[in-house]
Amino acid sequence: MTGPVVVGLDGSPASVTAAWWAAREAMGRRLPLVLLHSWTTQPLNVPIAQEALSKQRYGGQVLQRMESELLHRYEDLALTTELVSDPASKVLVDLSDTASLLVLGSRGQGSVASFLLGSISLHVLGLTRCPAVTVRAGDPAVETGWGRPTEGDRHEIVVGVPEAGPATDPLLEFAFTTAESRGARVRAVRALPLSSLVTHPHTAQADGGYEVDEQARLAAALAPWREKFPAVDVVYHVARGPAAQVLLRASAPSALTVLGRKRHPSPLAWKLGPVAHAALHHVPCPVAIVPHD
Image (tube, rainbow, N blue to C red; front, top):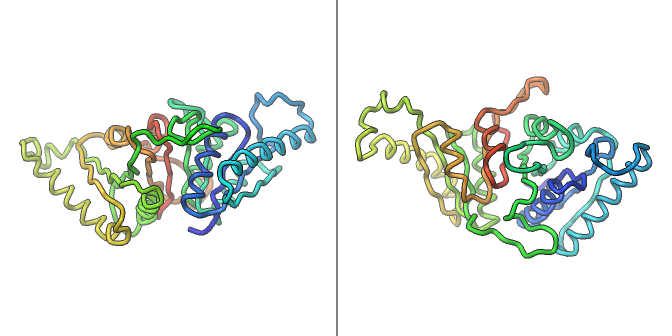
């Protein structure tokens, strides 16, 4: 990945937290950072008049203040700002053609609101051509303001792997690349359906034979990635139950949760699956959505 990290910024607490996360990620990946503000899609509670000139002036101030704060902390960060008039969702989706990563703010746990208005984040997550990450407002593990960075006990990159193969290679590449840049380990998660108790009755026994077999299959599928990223430790997490529940339990102590989304041939057909929706609503850490074939 050589394109920039692009973060949507409107001055809200959610977007400010997202900008700090994006800056740290850009530094770790040695990529430039772009701060984007759409003055035509500002929050409804912006305390300014509605005239276009006032909105543009406010947007410029938001960008200038964030740029100054980030460069004070990260002197070597290659940072540019963009003040645009097109709708934020359109600009972000267009930029995803060349960006390495999009970063969006979320208003907080229990709500996947947009970083700007209503459903913008969900729309962008469903259409982006590059990985996109949502970061919750006030996430205690994100470096913000002038405080010291903290990771707490978050030392894993969790990736949901319903299947492995060429189609999901972008998902695994993103997870392993992120883990390598952070010095973290990967927890590869696969959920086994409850129906396996019927189709594989020996799973009810203490030896958990089916789970062991599935763990071996998961390890074999990820073997090429372990070879490509030898410094990254991997934990194989196979559990029985609904995929969303298995993922949420595994993600509790993680630094980032990574999920895949199939690419859609038309912008009218975009959607996120139920597991992605559950993660975006309830996982406490940042969540990455990676498009794949």
